Image (cartoon, rainbow, N blue to C red; front, side):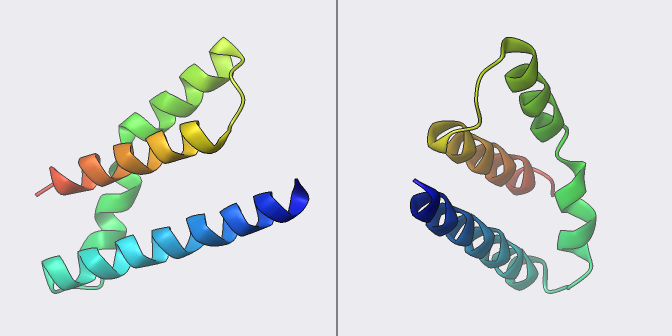
Length: 77
């Protein structure tokens, strides 16, 4: 179980780095993705709802959060 969570954490980290690099290529700036990424209010809302409902952070919820971040960044500009 710990090994699978370590691999998932590595994959999640790599996906965030790749998302940043894709945004750098799309906006042709290293600063714009850093300004857009924290502006994902849906992320804090989703984490709050997970906490309030007592739902655990599992693979499905992490995949949903990644999709939410992607959609938020996609519609930012």
